[in-house]
Length: 176
Image 1 (cartoon, rainbow, N blue to C red):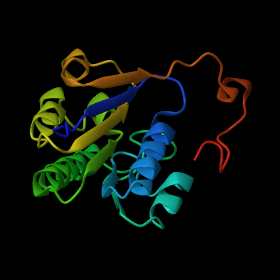
Image 2: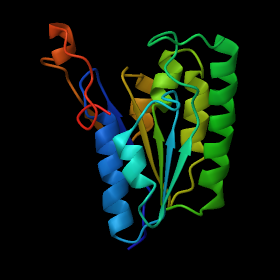
Image 3: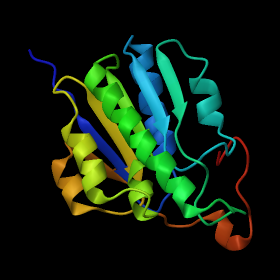
């Protein structure tokens, strides 16, 4: 049987997209697959999943973003965020083509489109550059038809209730 690299998308306004991608990385690494976990947007914001993934064999972690765009005290010029996203896109494309990894996770790549750091065409070209045998996982909030149509598996996280709306801020170990 021929191995088919899947394109997997976790989207939605609910929590769990990055956690699902991190879980996928753990599962893949646990079976001996080589994984690249690349994070767009989030920057050096603390990340429990990134911290543990860095310790796993077979997992390379690359921070591509410069932090959340326009929120949480961000004072960086948009041009800095755009440059980081474009460099990140180039990095992920090279990683995909290298076939060094069995699974490449582009966490928040769709969010980079939502924040106008990348275009739909940018991310679509990354998706299309994926070799047939490599798995690719993307995360983000919005349903972008062109990306959804190109994916093999799409899971939507739907927010029903969120503690933020009760004034409860993100908690280390649960939210990041």
